[in-house]
Structure formats: structure tokens, C-alpha cells
Length: 96
Length: 364
Image (cartoon, rainbow over all chains, first blue to last red; front, side, top):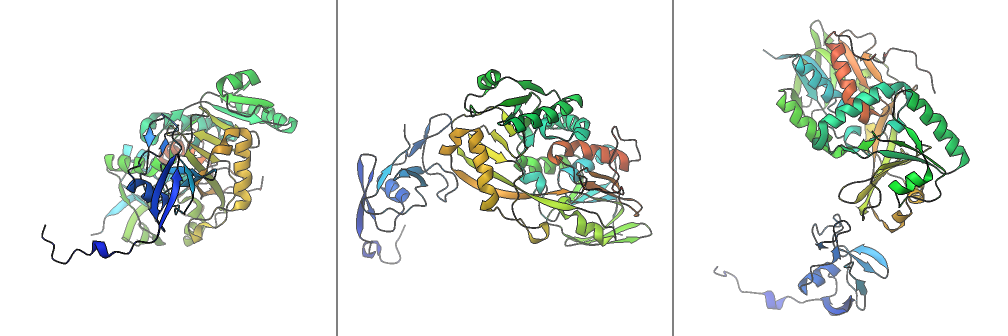
């Protein structure tokens, strides 16, 4: 496709970078992003195992309903699509 | 020339739709009108419990017939016959359970009392503090959110006319029947059936009839998907809990705890004051629920009259007008009540007696 206007992508000013822990992995994110967005950007899609058949599950609705992106933050279960990542956060998957 | 229907039904829930289907069998030209979508009132937001253990004794013959209707509807309404346990935790509750369930068993429900060992063998995850339990193999559930879709298909198949999002604003009588002024035009019909559930009172008032209809505001909650915890439906001797786990793992919790609101103002609201004891009781019965998060709670309006028996028959004082509603346990019994109502409107003798809406009401 022909670009009719200049590519301005490199001019987007990202918020400051932060870092949180997902299981044993350090995840880089930008301030203001949800945990889910940061994980997906890092190629992580498998967030939990289904409570019924144990098969892998990840984000589906991305609006806080389906519960498939739920992770544990400080022992509390939260929807990662609805929870903003903060620096130093400890996030655990519900993968078995 | 405007078409005249043999019957206009105000209210497209289980009662209205099942009556329309019965009438279609005999070729009556019927139209169903609903202010919203079909089956979106009590018919579509209740917890879906089909339990003979929570039916009133006098309604048992109707409930038994209702159960067969649901079983016949089967997969299309998410019908599952799981069997059901009702639990008692204190001496008082145990007495209540024995007294109530014995009467229901006498009335024809196959309810038995089961030992703690039998209960534990069937349901390992229930509280070990149970003192007494009853069991009914006929109990189960259906998915109430499929009600509207089910009847929409059935009405179409049977070529019954229906209008959704069609608000009936005014009903007047003339020499040839009834004129209904609605948000989707005027409807003429020689007969009229009011089947508007919790909205019956204002509609009957249009015709100058005062029906003593009130509404309960029942709360239902659903949890996130959980590993398999219970396979039967579970209730409490006081009637303050119904619980079932759906095949996707979600657990549905009801029990008739009262939220807030009135039908005239819309959907009603859940309140923490009643939701918390509802969920606490559920967790007392099934301790594993302490690990479950509730994803949604909602309320629905269940209509009743002071004696808690149905309104099913002629609308008092208005020729060719009928009313059907306020059926305690209406989800279970509704499809059968509609069939009886249809027989009555067709001038046939219903298999079981109806409930005269013109009777004297006494508070129970």
C-alpha cells in the first residue's frame, strides 16, 4: 500500500518503561499498559489452564468478562486485561 | 381492512408463548406482544432450577407435568436431569425438611431421605456438617437464558405471529373485541390474554381490573468456571439456596434473596445486604466456593398474589379476557400452565383445574 502521509510512528512518545515479574520472567512494559497487553507484546499468551479440562487458556474477550486472562497479583486473582501493570509488580500465572 | 386476531397475548414469556403454541395446535390465529424481547423477564433471568423439592404441595401435580414438558424440550433449553439434594444443618432445619418433604412425597414427588454416607458418596465436596438430606432423582435444571430463543423458534415453526419491543400502551374494548394501541401499531383481537408477569397489575388496571399482583426481586449470581465440584442441584431446607454447576464449570447461586426495585422502573438492583448472606450460605454448603469469584449477580421480578397460587383463568368482569401469571415455581410449571390455559381458551376442559383470578385472596 502507498503511504500518503509520512510515517509518524517513530515520533510517538511512549510513557516511561517499567518492569514487572511474571512467574520467573522479567517483563518490560510502558506505564499505563495493562498486564495483558505487556504480556502479549512479549509473546506470552498462555495465562492459565481451564478449570474443567486443563487445556491452555489466554485472553479472549479483553473486557473483563470471560475470566480466561485471570492471573494472581499479590495472592489476589485479577483480570489481567483490566489491571494496569506497575513497576516491580509480582504476577503469577494460573498455569499448572 | 385491518386483520383481526382470534387472540392477542400481552407478554412473551413462558406463559404467553406456551399458551400461543397450544392454541396454534387448534388453528387459532394468535399474536404475542412483548415490550422487550421474548423470554427476557422472569422466564429468562431465573436460576433455571427444576426442582420438585421446592414446589408447593398443591402445585405438585402441575410441577410433575411441567418437568415432563422441560424434559421434552431437552437440549434446546439446556435441560439436564441431575437429581437434587436438599440439605439441613440444624435440628430445626431437619424437622422442617422432614415435615415439608414428606408432604411433597405424599403429593407424588419421588423424594426420599438419604443418609450422610449416601450424600457423601454422591457429592464429596459438600460440607460435612450436614445433619439431614433429601433427594429427588427427577430434579435438574435448564438454561433460562435460552428461553427466548427457544420460543422464538417454536412460534415461527408454528406460524404464530409475535412482535418484540412492542409496548402495549392502551387496551380498549369494542363490540367485536379488543383494540390494543402499541408502539408498533394497533392490534385488533376478539380475545385477550394478559401474561405479563410482574407487569400484570398496570395492564389489568387499563381494563379497570385490580389484580393484587406484587413482585419479588430475586437475586441470582454466577461464579467463574470452577473445577467439577457438584454434579446434582443442591438446595437448603429453608429454601434460601439453590445451587448448580453448569457443564462449563460455572456455579449458579440463587435462593430468592431480595434485591431492590420495582418492575415499573426497569431491571432492579442487587444489594450487598442480601447478596452477602446468599453467598455465605452457598459457601457454607460448598466450602470450595471460598476459592471462587462471582462474575455477575443480577435480579429478576417474580410476580405473586397474596395466597401465592397462580392467576389462571378468566379476567374477572371482562368477557373474552384471560389472565395467566403469578405461578409460584413458574419456570418449572409454566409450559404446562400454558397448555392448560390454551385448553381453557379453546373451550375445552383442562386436564387439571385452573386457578380462578376472581377468587378472594387471603394472605398466607
